[in-house]
Length: 421
Image (cartoon, rainbow, N blue to C red):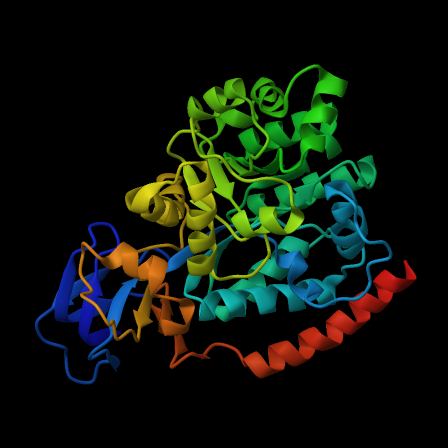
């Protein structure tokens, strides 16, 4: 397809090119090029007065939480982070079945698309519906047209048989040709044998680990009590920090030695500011952690502009990260995907912005406009892997009305199972 008369913003250099014609290739690793003439009979999208730039990536999401919005199933008001897990998220994931997983994935993929997120890195859990769960999610994302990197959250908390099922689901999914990671819940729910098996599987599949790290103080307390070392030291010893594909979510309660170990490793960190605020577990401190940091939503929503802004403002409490640091971290998920050879985030992933700025909009002011002006409401259209999946703020690949209707039906059933559990 061709984008006509577009104002193009290079996402890496922030250089502006006004009134250009852009040829967009299709494919998982497709590119773009600038042309002087558009061939007659081509598929043309007139972008006069609109801005076009690279779309976004979510560095850490939770499809499984999509049907939790407004639920009234919690049997006890949580008093701490562990009870948040026990009475909300673990209660929910145990009641997921194939229908609710599919509905959750479609809702999440649709929300990603409309927010300009054309690639999602997800961390899934459904302990009573493990086999085939990753493929259900993948097919839902494929249907909407959003790229993905999935994993199953392996944990011992529901029994060693469920941990083994998670390992088998992971191997089946990745060995079958899908790109994925080896997921773990958190250190305090993963024993030595399961951790060793997960690391061995990641090595066997040339993959990496995707795990929650020190989100709450319980993670460190448990690790020191059981293993005589802190969480990052434990993962270092197990080999989980050896993989450049490894993603560590949260990383709030770290000491200086752990920070040094992470900075010296090739792994990536995903900050989830709103989730941390919501769970009252502490704030992310970026100091001494190295350059490999990106933003996620942790299942709170699918809006990466919003997530990045909140992280920027929250980081002001820890000395700030500056405009350059903010934008680098906002775009680092692209670097994570490209350097690790994952497909689906090529140059042909774009957003069309219907933004009429009240002040000068140029390379020097672009990041300031993201922080203090641009929101997802200005995303008019979205191109994923060279295909238009959102136009004039409407999904083209699926019926959002049908997806939401099906999701409401599945949510009712899910909540009923949770009340009866």
